[in-house]
Length: 431
Figure (cartoon, rainbow, N blue to C red):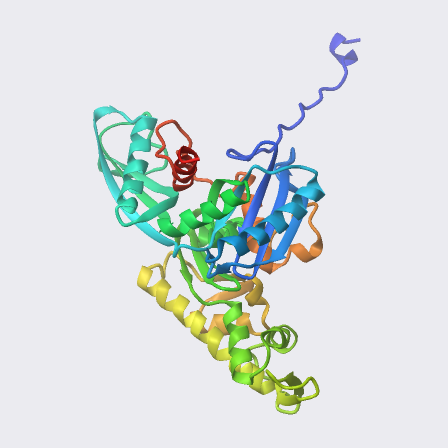
């Protein structure tokens, strides 16, 4: 008998863990500070590269308007309550969190930066210097850079390089996409979290996070726009060729729809929210004029109930959403992204669930529109995995290593200290 025939069959080695580059080790936490709710999720990355939630907490937001802190004491109480819920469930104590950026008037800026190499090989310090130059230009305007995404490099006269390290050239030109925000707003956010005994580990743009949670890979590469319709703001992010190309924010959201109903119907805000949730929409139906809804009036006795047709509710909500989509269309046109954004729009966020929002967006934006539900996350209740939670679930995706630039040059000894680190040092020096 052949000696080899007696050997046991070959066994394939086990597949390595699918841990993405940049994934968080150990247990980490994300914090979504919105105008209407504050969400904290504690999680870890498992061997297959996916996140598993260990603790979850959420509270109605207080002290926040338009995504920015306006009352430190009120916001501190709400953040502490949400974080405390998650800590108790996960049986752990947090010291740092990854936070979404939904305030500070975030904007996209594009820079072409030329760097003299002088006939030698490009090194990583060269790339860090280019990124630092981009951040410096933003800081001159009182802005703080949150993301710095290299979109491509030109080596002398040859474009299209994604990683020029080791290549020899005289001049290196980088296309950078920077997302920045007002320094004062970021300092207030950092001060509030310090009062909660928390340090900001990373900041992530809210619409960018929503895109990571809801887009499929083909949509990121072929061109898509994510519209995150939150409570106090509506933000959007444009993806193409796997990159984030543009992001912007409008100071209007679901709360403004509620406020319109409360003001025009003279009803308490709580009942206006209930009307919006149960009967709201932007599409009319033949029986809307015959369907009468009870509406309590502000300041009247409990038995003083007015009745209005559902058509009136639709007539109040529709103009506000129509205006919102028109503003987004104008912003996209002004950014010159008609070709890059493709034909696909994904609506997410709590306000996107209004009946008819998808159809209205398709008509105003002249694009194919779908409703985006976040990719499921293990360990979270079903109620925390809907469109209203797209931003915090996108933060988990970011912590799993998704969406990080090919050249992640932010860590390093020569990185300029961020606004939060400077704030921490300033407070410690005066303690």
